[in-house]
Length: 389
Image (tube, rainbow, N blue to C red; front, top):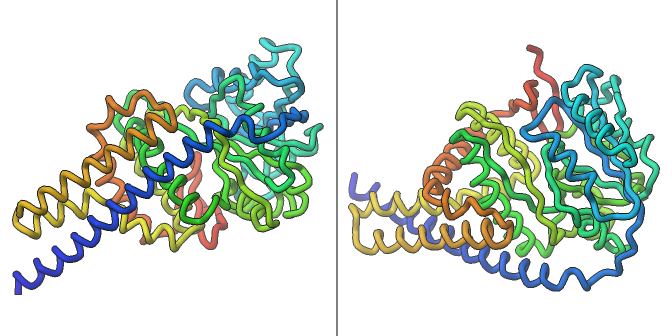
């Protein structure tokens, strides 16, 4: 009986190892295609440089938040404004905004306090009220912890010169704090999450969602989908905005620009909580694709095949090939595509990160509660309901 069970486990593990290897090859192919497109991107669109309103909703502070804000004031771009928005008039992020206004008195920087809560997603509630202050029809929304290069606005507005493009979004790399949890999250962003975005883009013939690192779009398309208020109760607001704009028959474009996100010094418990929120948000938004992740856990399947075969030679070769492909994805996507200089030094943590990701995936299948900026919510059908303290 035990021999039969081991045989079944071995067959399943071999299938998982093969499917994961195919997935890694897909990631490498998708990355190579993206790199070719990025090389040609700058000549693909006319550069009209329309005036832009940058909307940055805030809640609390993030690591190096001032320098991240400051990077938006150093743009090589003729006409733009930055609108920050908070819900709480005593939010600690306000001090950084005021300091920014003092350092850049000639830059159009505005702070909007929106005490009215329009729905469970306070970020989107702020955006809905901030929008009234925006002067321009080209809008960019990005998270408070995003840092950008001086050519950022030129890069993300360039594709919008094509009327068939409804939204532009960006890949990003994580800049870790000093803790292990922070390093594991940065590694996951650069070597797994962004690789999956490129693979999804290849398989689905494009992307139909946005990433919170950058959402660039026109006011006209936002109005057509019902404005920010129409998804003020959704957790994955970036995903929902992109999905709805794609639903208008327009393209969601992945920019050639890569930005940075500065991560908190997560303790391991905070790391797991953040990963779980992320995982349940993806599961709720893209259930089929999320369940399909089971076929991409290459290290788990290769180790299981090695154990079930009692360390057979062929299983050892399969493990070596799997590790080689996984490391190749990490280096090509993380180091070459995203420009993450920490990847070679942190690559030894890949097995730890990948096995922890399996645990997060399993736990995420069994619940509907997420923690976001200190508040707890129940998540169902993409929508949030606040859980009383």
